Amino acid sequence: MIMKRLAAQEQRILSLVADDAALLHVATPRVRFVNTSNGPCYEALFNRIELDRATLALPEPLLRIVVAHEVGHATQRKTMLLDFAWTVLSVMMLLSVPCIVFAISSEDDLWRITFPGIGFAFTLFVCLKIWSVRAAKRAAAFELDADAKAAALCGPALALAALEAMAARGHVDAARLDAMRARLVSTSQ
Image 1 (cartoon, rainbow, N blue to C red):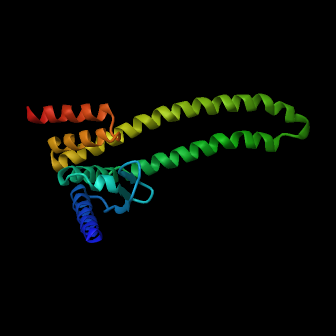
Image 2: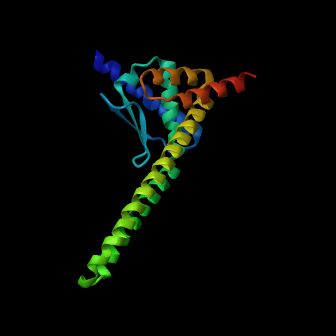
Image 3: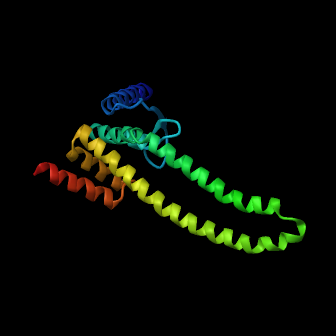
């Protein structure tokens, strides 16, 4: 009996994902159902949404918003993949510089690698700080955009209720709640 209920619920989720993807004009993401995770997420590399059993236990209107939010991330897939590719390319370029210096230096000049090595370590440290700040800003922008798409699909009041439920589970920060509250106030005026 429980398995039939889960299968029916999973089919309902697949239907919601397909409907939302059609409304947002994106390819329908695949859905992966897991027993435990850190909450629902969208994986751009595989165009896949991951939903855990705790999320599936949410009331239907809140679950609908969570699904709409995750499908909203599918509209950002190209940007997410380009960000990933740019980051990988940048790291590869940064790591290749000391390798090239080492490869073209003669054995007598190896002591000179110490100074460029210190410069490389400093540059790597600075780049990692810059990348982490940029990544945090990009992630916040992606989340706010997906929240806006979920609100457009399901209404800002329901989106706010879903965000509050997810905040209670520790998956949503105060900035996203405040942004949705502001959206709700602006649409009610």
